[in-house]
Picture 1 (cartoon, rainbow, N blue to C red):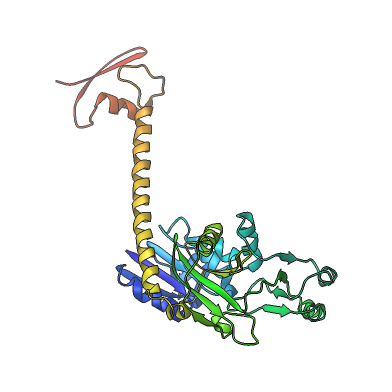
Picture 2 (tube, one colour; picture 1 turned 180 degrees about the vertical axis):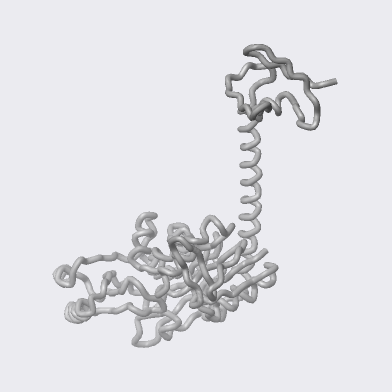
Amino acid sequence: MKVALISQGSKSSQMVGDALKKYFDEVDMIDLMEIDVRLGKESGIFYKNKEFGEYDCVYVKGSFRYAHLLRSIATMLEGKVPYMPLPAAAFTTVHNKLLTHLALQQQNVPMPKTWVFPSVELAKQSLRKARFPIVMKLPEGTQGRGVMFADSYSSASSLLDALGALNQPFIVQEYVETEGTDIRVLVVGEEIIGAMRRRAQREEKRSNIHAGGVGEGVELTREIINLALDTAKALNVDICGVDILEHPLGSKVIEANISPGLQGLSKVVPVDLGEQIARFLYEKTVAALAARKEERAMKLLQEIEAKKNEMPEEGKPVLGKLSLRGERLLLPEFVTKTSGFNDRREYVITSRRGKVEIEEGK
């Protein structure tokens, strides 16, 4: 079996790539930055100016900055590749915080109260009645980038002015006090293969590892486990990181990541995360290939059955047209099949006006 891992070559991707070699016959590490997608007459995916090969499994991952490219690649591959853990739509939905929250809202997954405003002016009017602190986020961004905190109306107003000047879209969320901690859960399929509690540095609200947060082991409650699995299901993805705020009044999902980093989590969990993901991809690919084979067999049987149904019963009159080629008479296919005629044998043809009888010669 052949697998391709399309990524930006991060350490986490390399960890998965190395593990894939234990399960697949061929493993190709594809650099996202050397792929182009062509639409129109000569449509296709091209890697280093050559047509993208055929694979049994393709795992596409990358930064939100390349969401359009990632979705284009996945869209072109859907239906051709037996198994991909991330559908094309996920690269638009999950790489955008607002679209992520909308998907979670549709499936009743708990999240912080979130507001979307059409303008800075209306946001300022509404925030006069808000309870501070609040969180302001750019819809796109990872590793804690684009997340701002305002502890008063004046600070929120200043941030809004800056966002307005930069013509940046934004969302506003309630601030949930967790003493600077959150929980990152790594979901693979219908299982959780790793989790950690992330703790922000002093004077820092963001607990992301890339923002200086520190990871530590954590024992998950049933509530957190269900939240993480429900989030992955709501987003229709097989592999993702889910960030959750743990709170006595009810835990809430704040973000999902379909290109989760493994390095920080690997330091606090006892399992090989790359190995777990590689094995999952292998098992799903085997199942997908078997399902595709069964589907083709069923389709073939249906076609055979349909042709049988098209064949008239032996001896039953059928209305049809004859094809004449000079002195030759071309018989319809159903006639040759039901009669068992063979063009290597000789036949006696007796004809009268309006009637032709054909018998096998002796």
